[in-house]
Image (cartoon, rainbow, N blue to C red; front, top):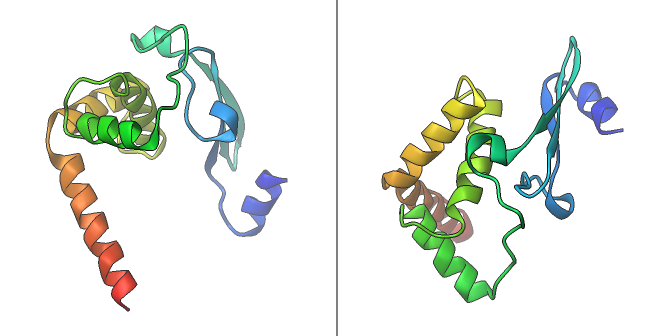
Length: 137
């Protein structure tokens, strides 16, 4: 149904992800099943985080909102946290699938470089400013 809808509205290229609990987050404890859809057909990818040095035997449990937000801020600031490998796995994948990186390995490297710099924090500030301007209108 999704494929037909996207084709009907003129979106010929898209990626589907069998993620965690229905989200687009790639799991680390099991295979990530990805569909790459193009006008020429569909390719199914089965990706394992462990093959890229990012696997784990279990997923990271959700914490309290305040603890999660603090850990997330530390992760985005380049500090080592338990969310770092999740950010590398998912960030690398999406950088690759969006065309920013040439391969998944390249995407993971780019994600690592982004986490090691302050660029993500700068982007967050820009997004927060844009949201504030939008709310003022």
